Image 1: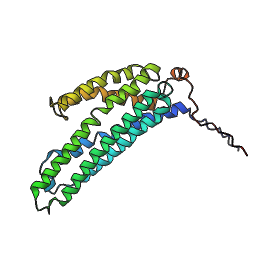
Image 2: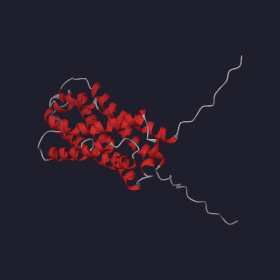
Image 3: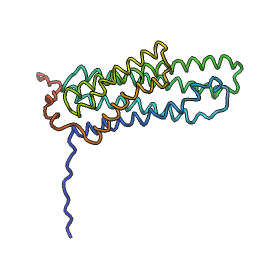
Image 4: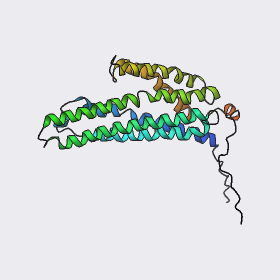
Length: 251
């Protein structure tokens, strides 16, 4: 009995790009959401550093945030070849914004891990007051990175990649339109937090952050499940070959 083997059909490059970018968008959600509850005690309990609480949850939160930061950069790297076919500036802006956001996240993670180190030494510390003061400084650093990174940069990301997606129609325009509407809302909310109108973690901050989260989640799901619209892909300018030309060398 003979077995017939069928040749494997390679995945279309644009479908592969959309799948990778979509999955990475969803990974940013998986990595970022658990951090706030896992960090709650170490960031909000002034006596945490002097107690004997377990830091395992905090460490898992830090790992999740690092994964979120790397996945965020990955979304920009994956979408750059597509976005630059429409706008080189928007594509570079998206990569830069994602990289800056990831940098802010990692700085915030480092501040939290420094708190873990202080907590490990807290029981034997001679001066509890100075330990708590140092801890509050690290908490303040984390709060500012949280505002400037996940608080502001997603709006810049939405303006860059959302504009490309809206103009090209690679995904249904209702999705990037949501991002373009959500971006100024998030920026206004971040400015309100900056000037003390309400806390970073509050009802108002959550409500004004929901539109940008909905945009990113729906964008990721659509790319992972559906991919780019073939009609829109066919209308994109051809990718330019940036390989430098070889210069003949005289013998």
